[in-house]
Image (cartoon, rainbow, N blue to C red; front, side, top):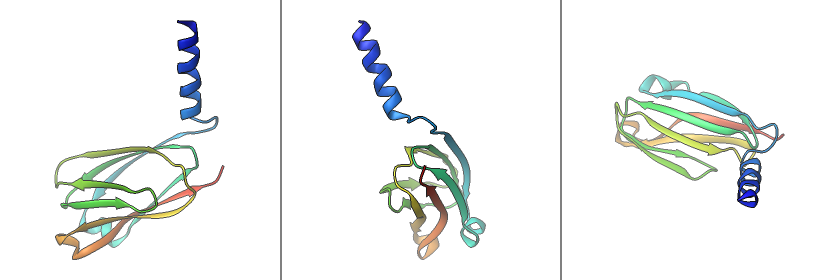
Amino acid sequence: MFVRILTLLALLVAAHPAGAEERAFDLTVSKAALAEPAVLKAEEGDRVILKIRPELDGLLHLHGYGHALPLKSGVVTTLDFTAQYSGRFPAELHGEQTRGHAVVFYLEVYPK
């Protein structure tokens, strides 16, 4: 039993490195948001939580991380992941209303 608890604690520490923070963002995906994409900032190892409130239908693709979320107008969607890679990554909405694709936001991840 004691070994199981230590193993679980070791896994939790490995999953959330020292100094890692939780970065939560509330985003509205609308035509106005597409005109001026937001810039979200995090550091490597941070937990990133995106709460997305779409006013447009489409597929949201976070480049560099491979996340793709189907969005339906009026339905809140959450994406929760660890920022593993440093760089500037565009998130694009693909769909008919954007006539192809349009950048919704940029995720900037800085090295620790």
